[in-house]
Length: 87
Image (cartoon, rainbow, N blue to C red; front, side, top):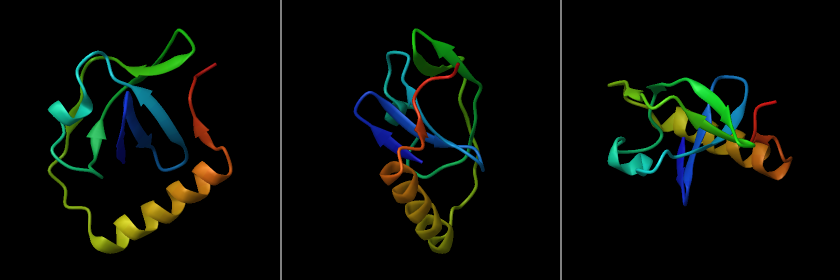
């Protein structure tokens, strides 16, 4: 959904996740946000990383979807619902 200083915010229809990059920034692999990617999230040292493979999808995210995602993200952030580690 959104690039962050040391990672990115991912969303999976139900939850928001702060996913740390594996060294290279997400901007090096993803041209714009929000975008749809296939990724496997993995717990690592009290953080969430991905398995090293990101597969961006060529799908246009329209303005209504962007607006809805902005609202959902703001609510998740305000309510502390962004998951930062997997137990």
